Image 1 (cartoon, each protein chain N blue to C red):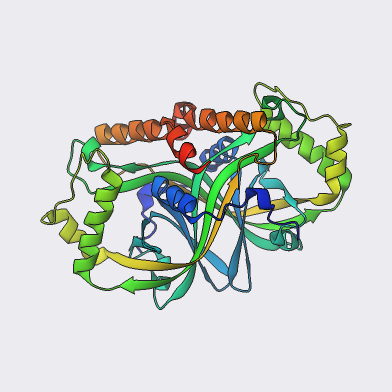
Image 2 (cartoon, chains in turn yellow, brown):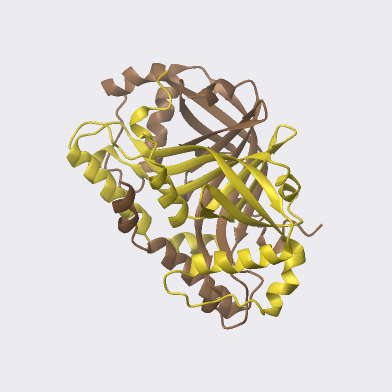
Length: 196
Length: 196
């Protein structure tokens, strides 16, 4: 079996946890009647588990319970790699860092646990500057609790897809890394001006 | 039905095409035996269709034919929105631009069509600078043709998820937009130093 190419697989769980903590917006996928249900939401990693919160009116909320199976994607940086950046002759490719997880999900019914979890997630996302603190007595928080469901995913399978030109020579790997940084620093204003 | 929130849905197909053309790395999802098969690859948009190429050893390659149904996600910028950036009192949230498509896929068997399609995709991805041209007589290109399958997706369903604080007042929408630009310009070197 030539797939997936071994040079692009990274089995180091700590690398994957770094991706999850740096890029917490997950793509959460359940399957119902052969169709994927897909939701984008931040998940907080803790001891082999992922904690999240979902709008009760989201159709996927019905599935995030009873130890159902879910698939989760976390996405790090990505960019097109032009052969022009290499010193050697190569074909065009795309580099990216993605983490694919599978897990079993259960609903957490307690509204007190949900409230604490929203406070904890905010602390995590506000780090390190902590310019905002979600206070337990925030009236807006309390009004929202009935419309949010908390869930916990136990991760059962980890796959790190780190496609970063690792099969090239060191100077070309370095050039690809530089390109990845550059592409992700490029100004997105022009794009936003078009669509928003 | 309160889901999805209407203020975050954008039905303008031209906005969605802008996302596809600016962020061509797609997440392509097929479902087999109740499990999602997920591949990350660039797709080129043309007249209601998406053209792509997949490693023949990728298990999903088997499914990209016979008018099978596929789901495709394109991802624009995203970032955490701290309530500290607003002039009004708000809860924390995450803003993002995502395009969800559904379509029917067919395999394109012709190796000549595949070859031309790889050249066309490279032209598109190298625009506007065109520092690299994939020449038809590139021997490496010819050697790879037997290991790549070309496919064409006819898009049957479009959904634009533009979650950009549109329900806030104009000055707060502007602050959220600024935050999105800032977050996506932040240095990723520190992250890459950890994992690669």
